[in-house]
Image 1 (spheres, rainbow, N blue to C red):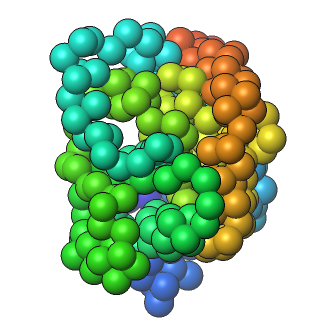
Image 2 (cartoon, rainbow, N blue to C red):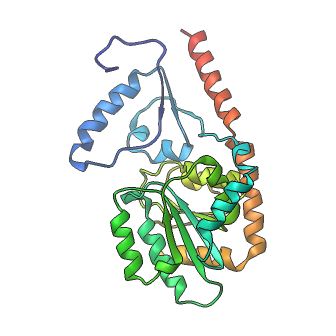
Image 3 (cartoon, rainbow, N blue to C red):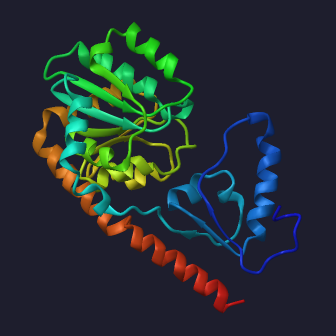
Length: 281
């Protein structure tokens, strides 16, 4: 619609990530996307990693403002007693150490890798590890079959998406957050950012996008190669077996969100971009 209309002097757009499907149409889609982005007055994206790795942005040849997605850490600071009771019922019986995944159950999220890593941990020594999977999507039947095939049904529980208050409590009742995404269509990881805001350490994957900038490897959590079952299991085991490191990473995660990814900071950056656009037009 923008390309068909006369050029507007004050158009601002945020580019969140490349499309990856359907592959046969991507060359044509990218051409239209680049034409659209070049026409926009102000172009923003969510991380400098994405500027470098995006097949669209890296070939655009124009200035791009990096404005990270922000969250309000206060939303996850004070869960109610009722939400804590609900969260406790969800994690009860899953094991000594519980990992949390929250997101859509779709091809690029890599939940299959998480289940396979959990199965390998089931056969090792040490405290038992369980997973709470919060979300819904087309892969639900496949993930259920995979869970049963690995014999870990007693260590995996899937629940539908929850209200904000319950997430706040779940971040307090689980031990780490895992974002095992497989493809760069995972451009940022907002659920991961929310978990970090609550002081939860994170295990994520290196995709060349904002996920491994949000989660600083060795500081706020651990970053592993996508689809690597052994590396993911090792990272979870590392956090399970070192409570001191887990606590330090959780504290660092909360500080990182407060310093770099606050909602007010994001709003102020957008306001500044809009003021600059208006003043120069």
